Image (tube, rainbow, N blue to C red):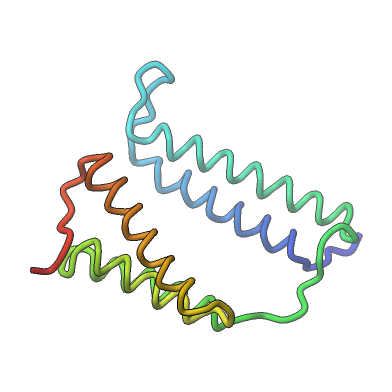
Length: 149
């Protein structure tokens, strides 16, 4: 049987690698029990679920490759801009604050795409900033600095 590299195969491999990585990294935390969860319980369960999804996708793409789309070309630009935007966010969150970090994240990740209007971009910045502030600062009470001043 010949393994074809298609979108489902690559997606399954990505899910599997992230799931296994999560399980490995969470091994340093106490697992606990379902009634008394430790800090490693949720990451390990999530890693197992992601790994199972990845294995399922890999098996499906190998047994029935005709059901998956073939990879026409490799898009490097979105990958670079998305990774750069996450890196920028992590560098800015402490020094510039959550609002600036989310704005930079959305604007820099938008450079990876080729479509969309300016109005959509402005709406996305405003809505995602409000959601991030609402959830993390007010909903979860995480003491994040909101702005650099």
